[in-house]
Length: 120
Image (cartoon, rainbow, N blue to C red; front, side, top):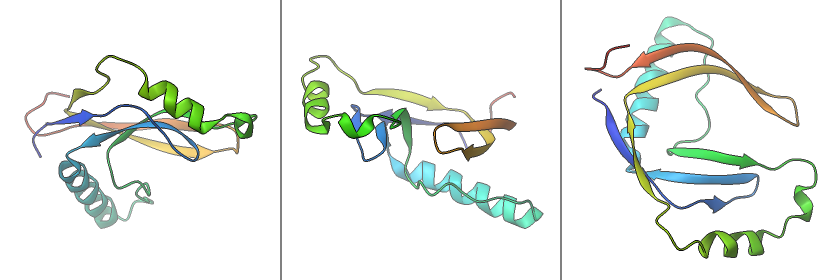
């Protein structure tokens, strides 16, 4: 697959964090599907992430999150009067082993995979 450009939107407040979504989603889905097929065919212990849309996580909820007023936070983000969306060139994949300990999300890098036409 050739590198693709995704456009990421303004931050959004979700149930467990703040993230920015990207589009178009089709290239992301194609990358996830191709990677899943390759990993399954090798017999590697691999489970695709449950997310099936491109996004960047900016913050995750932790202790004290129940005290955050999501309505106020959403209003503050909406009041930012400057462009917050922008393009991001996706020219490689970073494969990581990820786990949660209940308070933190951690990962170990496994491989960096350039997309077609990109030097490693």
